[in-house]
Image (cartoon, rainbow, N blue to C red; front, side):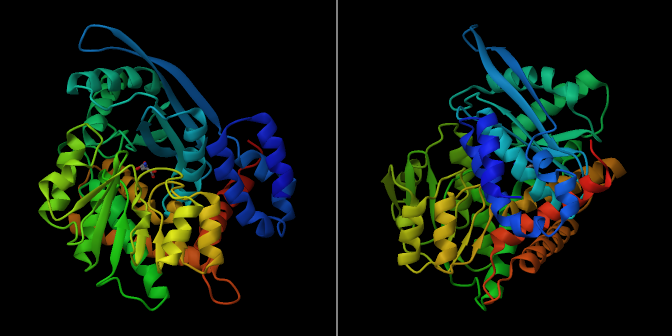
Length: 445
Ligand code: 2IT
């Protein structure tokens, strides 16, 4: 297998699908060497099969707004790969959503889910719907309309969606309510549900908590302690909230959060009540962080800027894809950053990742660092299938174990001859080998 040859063919087939092609290229470059040591993969055309989704459902999502006007959005579910288990992955509602973005996310999800040690395949779904400024009733009607189409290909052993950007507990509730009505079943076929109806305790915190557990392992590898470290976090949604909370509990000081409007620098640290205020900011539905600086005058708001210009020990992008580019990477490295844990999916551009690795800055890729979210979704599926409920301690303990296993797999496949750990390579190879072997054993299908 030659990455360039495969990529040329893929670019010709899917022109302009920038994010999808970017995600595929990253994985292929990482696995090329190992793949070429396995002629049985080549013979079964594993690469040619693994880069294409199993199927894509696209549909129209009509809904009526509060003024009585009919609105029409696009809806999607990309079922990427179910070699190791039922399709599993989030749903994103954001105006930037395109098929390319959902294909990149579904592709990444396949390898991420393989890393979690749980039996879950990869999928992603969503819509170009813009939740900003919508009323609760509008959100509900939109969710119901989305599910009216999507439910046809979902099921507890088939495909189990969850949240992502723009889809939190409220949306999951509305989506699941409609799913149940349409399918006459209570199988819990959505994760991130409310605790009263089968949701796992700790799911809202899980992505951010898991990311901090993974970060701790990365720091351990370098003989560093998280205590006393300063951290730049981007974003201010559910994932950033959990990461800020756990990093603070572990003794670090988080000094930034950000939104589409700019970033907040809070030299005192975003802890306690300020961390909870992030939820309020998010719930306002305005998608801006500026009000933080009005409420906490010791902090500063930098309009239109990203937090990567702040001098910190650790960077944790927690917002969205390609939010940290080569220029940002250069600034962080020049300012002495010791570790970068990518929490958003493909949060860093390929050039930024190359820069970190060239400069021997340990870089944890999203598919490993953020895998605690979907892993806890997997635990929710188990609890639902068994009709039982685990305590926060039980879930947290399992999450700890999973993040430790994910980290171990990355180190196993990512340690370089000079001792440096290339976590990108490690995560890609570990995830790929599992899915590829499963596909091989199941024949050409
Ligand atoms: O990107 C992700 O892993 C998620 N949005 C969570 C997926 C899930 O099924 O919990």
